[in-house]
Amino acid sequence: METALSGLLVDLTEICESVKVVEGEDVVIEVRSPRSSIGAHRFKKVLGSLEASMAACIVAAKLKLPIYVASEVEEGRVKRIVLRICRE
Image 1 (cartoon, rainbow, N blue to C red):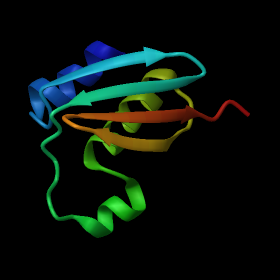
Image 2 (cartoon, one colour):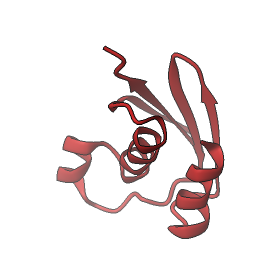
Image 3 (tube, helix red, strand yellow):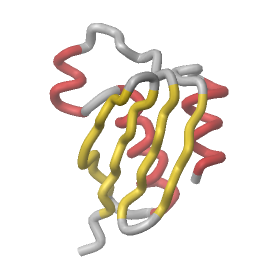
Image 4 (cartoon, helix red, strand yellow):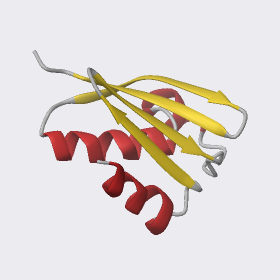
């Protein structure tokens, strides 16, 4: 999972410097130095940040399960994204 997300968010799109993933009941993603603070406020209101939306798409495709962005918190240069897996 981390390899796929890093490939997309760091290498391909250069939206952030690095990605760390912890899988459990939820998928927690730490994005270091996100660069997607483009003024797309309407997009952000509906779909969350660009990096969260892209991460959710990758995780959903890998797990073949529905996913939603449960939360996004920025702490300094790190954004923590929690993706909730819909198993029911």
